[in-house]
Image (cartoon, rainbow, N blue to C red; front, side, top):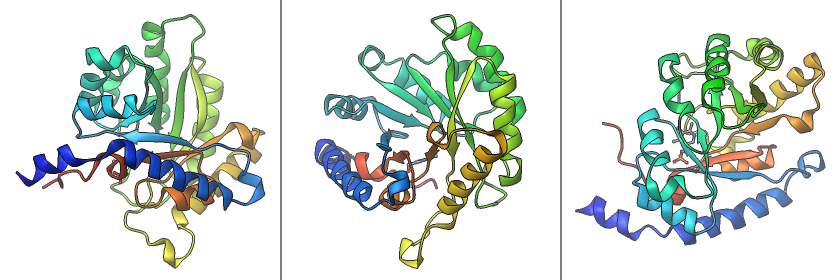
Length: 253
Ligand SMILES: *Cc1c(COP(=O)(O)O)cnc(C)c1O
């Protein structure tokens, strides 16, 4: 009972407007080196029903994120969603045997969670079967395990340059878009800048220096509901916000 009434009460338009305001304020607090970037808000709709995605689309939201393959497939193919101007971000751990399912999703915009050469190679070769236009490259980000926690996916910090190099040089059907991290949960920004975010910023500097890339062409995907403003102040260009838009998710028990 409590859950269903909560679902009905969620004010998606109000939440989106509030978050956009907070993003603008966070942007104004950034150091000048980051001030030329307009951060993108990705609405993370995992565990939420298609009608809430449609409400957010109606409110003008275009970028959405999912981290379970089957949910992305279901929502992406929903008749009232696939015809809309929607751009899907896959943000979950991707197993190679699920790559084709993800690539077949209409309006797939980016896979943010490439964390190995094997996965990059599998996506690269399969994309040929799914792309709509010749030369149409699929956007990917490289996920970095900045917190070094074993249960987190992502490549090790020290392997990031090599993986980015592999994506750029050996995966002709992929467009390298940037770096992504999840980071340790529950960090309190009152204790100073989030070490995971600082570490991704530093990782980008290293990768760009080592590979001769323009830092302006390498995005940073970091920040979620509790810390997206903080992440933007530290240079995030892509924040992934779920519960602050769609309401709390039932806890995984
Ligand atoms: C669930 C999830 C989010 C959004 O989390 P909220 O705390 O609900 O904003 C962002 N990124 C990833 C990778 C996620 O799995």
